[in-house]
Amino acid sequence: MSAEPFFTFNPVPDATPIGQAVGLLEDEHGGQVFLHGLLAYVWDTGDAAARRATAVGLWRIKAATASQIAAAFGAGEGTIWRWHRALES
Image (cartoon, rainbow, N blue to C red; front, side, top):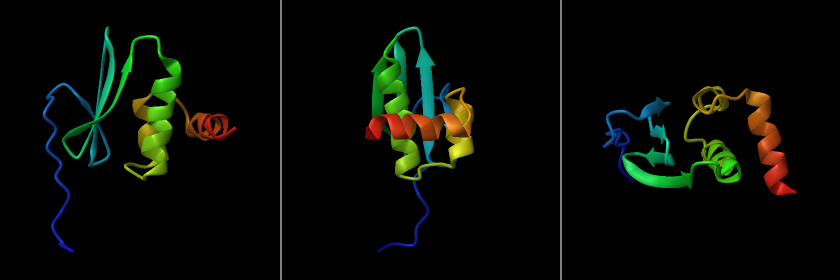
């Protein structure tokens, strides 16, 4: 296993950074999340469930802190937890 740092290049310059590994891009068509420079999540405009699942997915894999993810998605840390519980039920 290599001790090299993670690849942090974000191919979309307008993407909002979330921690060191994630870039979030939202526009009138929906959203995209890049993880270590690779497209990892996509959702269409109005698809709140997919957007919430993306935020929870990032939290689950510890791609960034809960506060960083919550801030980028315009939510509170408690909201991320509630979304997580809703997805599990």
